[in-house]
Image (cartoon, rainbow, N blue to C red; front, side):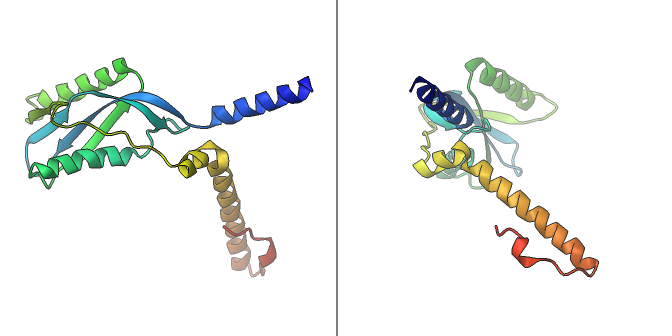
Length: 175
C-alpha cells in the first residue's frame, strides 16, 4: 500500500512539474506609431494569479497588448502598435523598463515619451479556460509528437512516390 501511495505521489508531482501554474507577474506596455515620433509607456503593474504556461510564456500574452491597443484607440490613437513586457520578478522587469526608457529617451532615437499612469490604464488579468490549462499539462506534447510522426511518414511517402514506389496508405498516420 505504501509503495502504491508513493508511486501515485511521484506521478502527481511529475505531472504538476510539466504543467503551467498561476503566478504573480509584473508587466508594462509600450505603444508606438510608425507615423509619429511619440511613444506611450505604461507604469510597471503587478498582476496576481496569472497563468504562466509550462514554456514560461504568459498565457494569452497577445491579449494584454490588445488591452493597451484598445485603450489607445479610445484616446483617438488608431495607428498604434502595442507591445507588452513581463517578468515574474520585479527587479527583472525594472531592468527591462529602465533599458527601454533609456533607448526611447536617447537623442539618437528622437522619440517623445508620454507616460501612462496606473490610474489612467490598468492591465486586466486574463484567465485561462480549463481546456487551456489541460492542454498545457501534457496533452499538447502528445499532439505535437503525433503530428511530427505523421509529417515524417508523409515525407517518406513523398520520397517513395518520386522513386516510383507506391506508398502503403494504411501505415501513414492521420493528423
